Image (cartoon, rainbow, N blue to C red; front, side, top):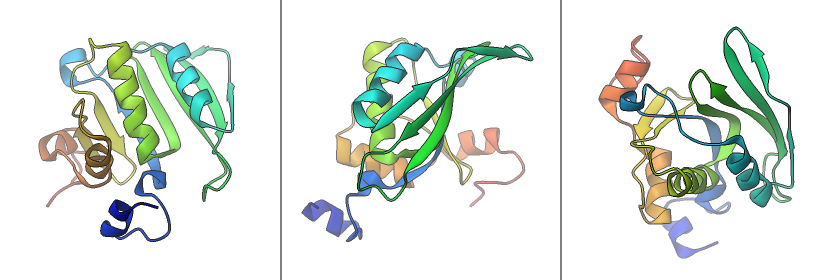
Length: 165
C-alpha cells in the first residue's frame, strides 16, 4: 500500500482494486458506438486476469455479442465475474465487475489502439456517467473514475432522475 492510498482513506488496500459494474461506450458524436476489436479487449483482460474465457460471437435481435467470463488474480476480494462485448450494431463493453484501476487502464489502452474514439462514455452501476479524459495521470484518473460524474450526460442517460443533485 502506498501513502496515497492512506490519504484517500483506504487502509484495506490499493484504491485501484475497488471494483464496480461498468459500461463503456462511444460518445454521442459517435452515435454511442465505441471503436475497438474483441481481440484487443481479450488480450488486455488476459494480461491482468487469472483466467479468461471468451465465447464465439452470437447474433440475436440484431445485436452481435461476445460473452466473457474471467477470474480476478489471487488476493482480490472478488473471485469471478463476467462481461460482454457488443460488436454490432454499435460497439460497447459491459462488465459486471471491473476494478477502477483496470477500467482506467482499459480506457487508456483503447484510446492508444483506436485514437478515433473521442470522449469515451463510462457508466457505473449507481447511475453515474462521465466522459473519460485521456492521458490523465493514473492516480488522478482512477480517483476521477471513482468519484466524478457529468451532470448533463447522466441526466441524458438516466432521465428518470438518477444523478440529480
